[in-house]
Image (cartoon, rainbow, N blue to C red; front, side):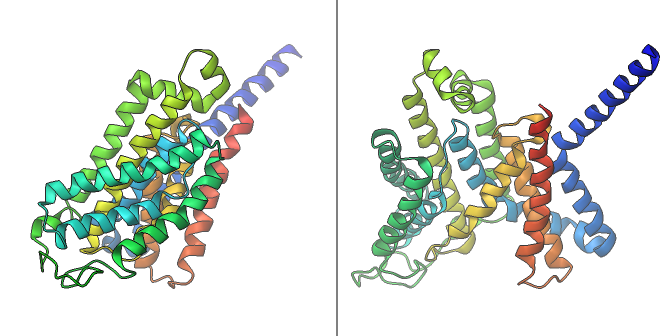
Length: 336
C-alpha cells in the first residue's frame, strides 16, 4: 500500500515537473515549432541567410519598444502612449536633420532630450496626480498625436518638403549615414545593445532589483525603505530613452517621419513582453524574454507572409498563435 502511494506520488511529481518545464519554456517551444513548420513547408526560402536577416531586422524595432515596455512594467507600471510618443521622436529626429541641418549625432541627442522632456508629463500625471497608468497614458496618446501633427503641419517629414511655415529645408537629401541606422547590421546591433543594457540594469544592479521589488509588492518595497516614487520616475526616464531610440529607428528605416509612423508597433511590442515574461520561469517582465517574444512575433509574420497567407487573414492567424503561447505561459501561474 505504501509502495503504491509512493509510486503515485513520484508519478504525480514527475508529471508536474514536465508540465512546469513545458509552461516555463512555452514561448521558446512555440518559436522552435514555427521554425520547423515554416522550414518544412517553404524549405530554403525561409531558412535562407537573407530571410534570417529580414527576421532580425523586422524584430529590431518591436524589441526596442518591447524593452521600453519591459522597464515600465518592471515596477508594475504600464504605458499605452509609448509608440505615439515615439512618432513625435521621429518627427523631431528627421526635422532637426532636414529642416535645420543639424549633424546626425546632435539630432540623436536633441531627440532623446525632447522625448525625456515630453515624458515628464507622463510622470506628472502618474506620480503627482496619481492617475492610474492605463488611464493617464491612454489620454496622452491623443496629446502626443495632436502635438506631433501640429509640429509637422499635418504631413510627413521627408526630403524635399518645406517646413510648416513655408521655409525651405537646410538639407534636401538624406546622407547614407542617416539611412544606415535603420538597415542591417546597425539596426540589429542597436537592438542587441538595447537588450543587453536593459538586462544588465534590471538583473545586476541594485536599482534594477529595487524596481523589480516594487513590481512584486509596492507596499512591501516602500516599507523596506525603497523610494518607490523615485524609482518609478527612474524607470520612466529609462523608458523614455528607449522610446526615443525606437522613434529614431522608425524614421531611419523609413527614411522619413510618417504621420503616426510608430503607432502600429504598440500591440506587437506589448505582445512580446507578455509572451516573454514567463520564459525560463521568470514570471516578470525581463529583457531576454522580451527578445524571445519579439522574435516569435516577427517569425510568425515573416513565415506566414512567405506562405502567401492573405494579408487580411495574417493578423488573425498571428494573434491566434500568440494567444496559444500566452495561454501556455500564464497557465503556469496556477501551478505555483
